Amino acid sequence: MSLETRLWGTKLFRETLKAYKKFQWIHTTMPTQIRMECTKVCNLSCVGCRRIWEDDISKVPGDKHLTVDMVKNVVEQIPGLRLLGFSGDSEPTVNPYFWDILRYLKSKGVRSTFTTNNTLLNKNTIKLCEDYGIIRISVSQTGATKETFEKIRVGAKFEKVMENNYLIGNSSIPLFLNFAVLNRELLDEIPEFFRIAKDVKATGVQFLKLMLEDDKHLSTVD
Ligand SMILES: C[S@@+](CC[C@H](N)C(=O)[O-])C[C@H]1O[C@@H](n2cnc3c(N)ncnc32)[C@H](O)[C@@H]1O
Ligand code: SF4
Image 1 (cartoon, rainbow, N blue to C red):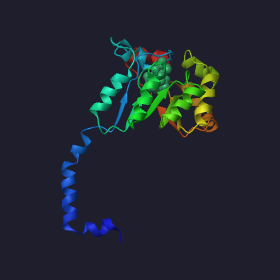
Image 2 (cartoon, rainbow, N blue to C red):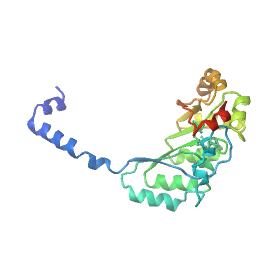
Image 3 (cartoon, rainbow, N blue to C red):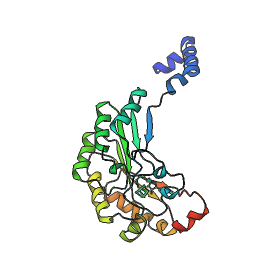
Image 4 (tube, protein in one colour):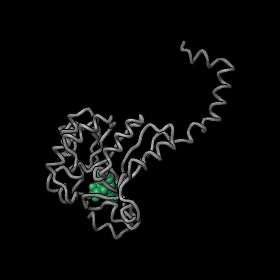
């Protein structure tokens, strides 16, 4: 009989559990994981991207990039923070302070993860990600052939992204490949997408549902 099973029989255990359930919200008022935008800037102009929406972050006035001091401010206010993920509607790796931010987070014992278009990483920065204990890099791989990929990921080079996929896949960092299902043509490329994921040693894949602001954006992803 396990300790839990034996304890469950005692009144003290049941009362303690009841009290814990009543007050457990106290532990959950401070988040242990948060997600943030790292910058408002992007180096690509992908078809269908939410950056064309009227209320998108890229149009908000103010600082373009998150700085180490801004992140410090957040970390100091959330003592139990364990994970900070960078994602949203911009490209984290264009932030010139990104690597300093990751180094700072590591020094505070906060793990990081980020979603990237994977056009700007290289051998050295992937090594930095390993050093900073990044728990996962999610790469947007919308399109499994050069033609489709470059038609959608406007400004990206398929070969460069694939080269970086291999580098991450062969590093100690878990790699996720994200596939936004934006149109029918892309649906046909799903088998090839799985082949690529296996080839680059991705540890997981994720399919993203198409999000549209309103009908006027339908034509962009037809
Ligand atoms: C907006 S990007 C930001 C991170 C980074 N720039 C990148 O491309 O990975 C995050 C993911 O959202 C997806 N995405 C962009 N617009 C979308 C939309 N309208 N519906 C669904 N997914 C979208 C992209 O394909 C990408 O995989
Ligand atoms: S790289 Fe990411 S943020 Fe930039 S346009 Fe493409 S999907 Fe949008």
